[in-house]
Image 1: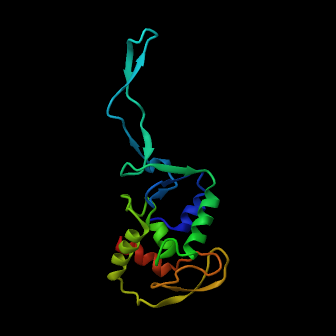
Image 2 (image 1 turned 180 degrees about the vertical axis):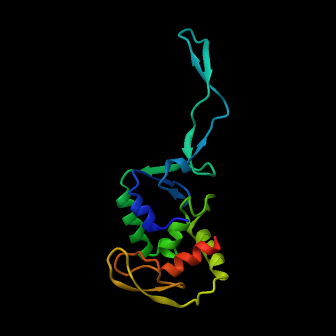
Image 3 (image 1 turned 60 degrees about the horizontal axis):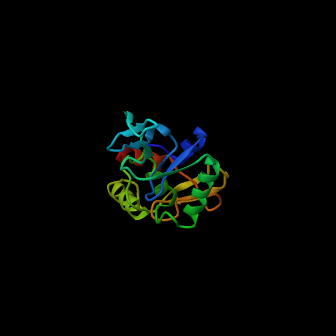
Amino acid sequence: MITFEEVLAAKPEMIFYGAQTPWWTHKAEHLSAFKMKEKLKLLNGDGSVRKEVEPPGLPCDPRGGMLMQTDKTKEFLEAAKRAALEGKYGRHGIYCFMEAHHLNMRTPLDNWDAYNDRLDEKLKGDKIKRNRIKLCLCPYCEKEMDVKIDGAWCCEVCGVGYTEEFKKMLENIN
């Protein structure tokens, strides 16, 4: 399991993300390769086949989906925080975004609703009350924030916030 803070701390050089799914990663070794079924034919000037080679394959997500990538990683992650505040990822906000990271779920789901449903299932068996956990400090802007399991999990100022209890709870149900 990886958290938003851990991705930030890693200062990745590149982020790869699904063009048609929410899946993403910050490590090239998580990528799969879409291989062509046929070998490439290298031709001589007269059109005869000089040799056949196996193409290297296109990088893709674990299901073979097309990828995009960016070297503007800080901007990508800041945009994710803003999108979480705006409700793009649904009821679990930044946690839903992190659930789509390869280290949290290797097989991409089709949409944010599917990731939210998966988080709902994970949380069904938790022993933490489904209301307030505790007041904590946001690790980014250091403002006090109230973290809830049902609803506003993000800091109202910068969009991020984990409590240690919540992080441990997610680790225990994975």
